[in-house]
Length: 368
Ligand SMILES: [Zn+2]
Image 1: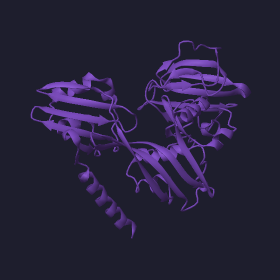
Image 2: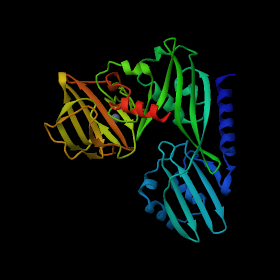
Image 3: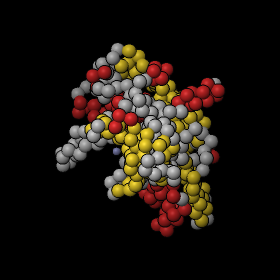
């Protein structure tokens, strides 16, 4: 099949899936998926909310206003005579929101869904990129990028992946009111790297979780992860080009995507050498470690109150909270490592887990 034909087929499949995405479930809900160009306002408009009612919905909950819709986002709708109810599920976090219009009155806010979970296994072979090999099997950017997160510390070059390298993974499918509303975490993975099968499992912890295998415990990297949950939004790219201007806009750190308020941890024992606020980094902290190595933490929401110049912090100490201050469009931690004045790729220097990994493993064992 030539490429052009393949593209047309792809488009047809996409159109079909987007029209098939309406299913009736329990309690008279139907499930819908976000289409390209949708936002919360346009969805509310489609459901008959007036401009004033839409304002009221967005005004009643800060989380709803911050909700980031992706093509993975699904929502449920129920309509009765004088009622419209929507349930919207954040595809990237565990947050869920309920919006109710009853006899013209609006109620909106977050709620705790009681998801029913099933598990799906996907098998495949890598052709081209990992992303491009997973997406045709499961049409979810979230799932494909989580699989890449599992191996972010293992694959240092595309050369590590042989053409046709086999992979598989199991992923959670979450249901509410009998309807599929989102994928959860990938729980187990396998990928052939340099001719060897590398397995990972997702180890959950309070407020986090990381992909892990026993070999990772032998890891000699000197720093720990500065966050409890590793989801990589952007990697270290010293030669990154702007897609339009083609000018070099290097990205000299790694971006960990996390909700506002999540803990930022000292990657290693060190001394606070600078902290404060500037227009690009937002609220930031710089720590100095042995061998004149510095780590920096940007876009922070809150800096811990005890932080001051000269303070010694221990590995794994909470020093701040994740935010979106400075140049930032979505909450994340920009984390960088400088060795003797040179910025380096942090993923080559930090372990794939935070310092409390042993506690995380112990609690996992206790649960089983
Ligand atoms: Zn960054």
